[in-house]
Image (cartoon, rainbow, N blue to C red; front, side):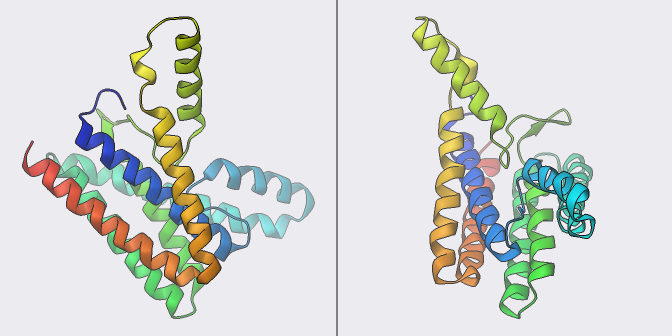
Amino acid sequence: MHRYDPARQRLALGLAGLAGLVDATGFVVAGGYFTSFMSGNTTRMGVELAQRPLLALAPLALIGCFLAGVIGGALIAPRVAGRRKRVLLGLIAAMLGSGAGLLAAGLPIPFLALSAMAMGLANNVFARDGEVTVGVTYMTGALVRFGQGIAARLADERLDSARGYGWLWSALALGAASGGALCLVSPKIAAGVAVLLALGLWGAALRIERTA
């Protein structure tokens, strides 16, 4: 996070918030599975393989969709140099929009598949030399860096590499809380808000890359 300018840091925070919103909506629609938190799906898959093997197919399918999004994003990114963020965010918005339409039509399974693919794709937005520089859909690493930053402050030291990770986790948590609140009204509304947020992030990425 600390390597990016303020505009890109804000974009990363917005993308983490989007991931939280999409994950919370997917969690409600899927009845306890995730569309961006693959560690949780992996744990559920392992437990269900041991206890109720057929149920393990649900988290396995979501993991497969997420992985397909990661692979697709990694293949697309080198071909759109200088336009990566706007192209990938445009695709994310299109996937979430299609998924929201399918959910509104009473088709939750394709909605979940497209949401997981979009979140896999999102992890390619902030990458350099083929390596993810800011993970926006998983926060264990961010919390570790945040904790290391706190430890450095307690030791009266400075750890610049830890800056921003507490905000990144907070953005995802806020997005998840917003998704949970919107789902109390309707998951369809939560899915629609996610589309609007994705479009807003696409616009922000367009401005950033045009002024780079």
